[in-house]
Length: 531
Image (cartoon, rainbow, N blue to C red; front, top):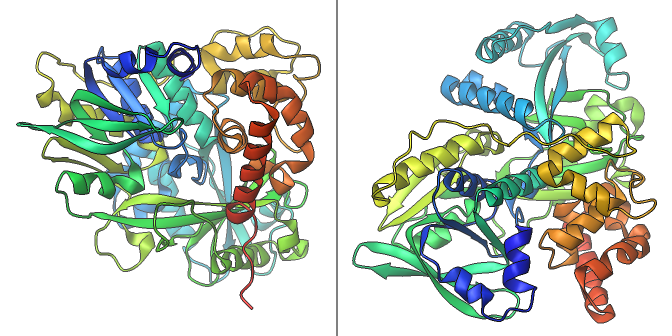
């Protein structure tokens, strides 16, 4: 990410980027979310020459706007989709083992209330199957007194006890960046703000694309033996150029972010929404409390950013009022909101919640499209994509057995407690010590209201391909979700740390700050009420 970006675009060599793009590539991957990043990693570590391009920023789309959960798909068991659950449980456990500090266990509590579904027997049967797939056994039921102590603000009326289970959570955008970092260690190349405008064809079908640089508008023709469309919910747009018919049903999931002190949770609380029985959750994340999610058809088009609607906001607030009545939560407690569009395969199901979450791989006139699936299973999806690409890569063969997701991160030397060190190792891997060494006095302190360090801002500005302030505050760090007003009260210190590292003059900083704050108000604040 950083090395190729700086050498190609920021070191002053006018012909560096054209020379880079003129190389002979095995794979051209279009899309910089978790699917594209996973394919870049698995291809690069297996000796393929792979280039990834993203028309906006890395993780700009769904992969920075997910529910932040790395889960085994417990709810898929009731649909009889045991294979998907087994696969997800295996991948969750691999990430827990290999990405400690980035992917962390999260305990869940589900209240057993009189008349609420699913009933105790059904839920516990599902958890027993879940345990069997994970090769472990946990205690899953507690009485009402113990459940009340574990979830002190949850509703008491009709409470009989509660079910407990464990999944995992992550910082989804940082997971994408860590995968890209690992891919670059194996020779992969990733460029953000580089759009694939037009597919190129030869007699055998698609064999490249015309790329347009978002910085200066320059265009470049890039050839590759395989072009991979990993644009997620946007995949139908590129598929149309290869003659593919629409197959996706964009679904929106929206979330609320509250201060941890206002909705304090020691564990995640999962519930079925009182209006329609859909699963809703609230859990501690990065110093705040996350509440989600909705599941509705996204009819607003895909050219702009998704945003929560008034109906979705009311829906999630109703769930909070039902589960935590004593807290009297209101919209004034909400720090931020966010919404993402999921790449779901259109199966014709009327209820969005019943649409398939499986991934799909389609080869159409030489274009390999990979979409659908879940954040948790990105490694499985990447290996499946390479399996489909192998016939178009004569001379390359690989068993495609799963490898450790990340190389072990070295031990760190820093005047920090164990928890921040673990966090830095998980997020930055081999770069974590350099981040620490780059910190100025006071920058190894935690930013109030978050778990981030000030030093992470400096490192991101210096090395992580930041082109706009939104890249820095919504994806490299998550301050735009964790701080009121997108972090406007801290903007002076953020500027003092980052402006010189970014090599921006005052005019560019001012313009980027204004654009970021306008974006935040429109897409990350509370929606207005209709008159």
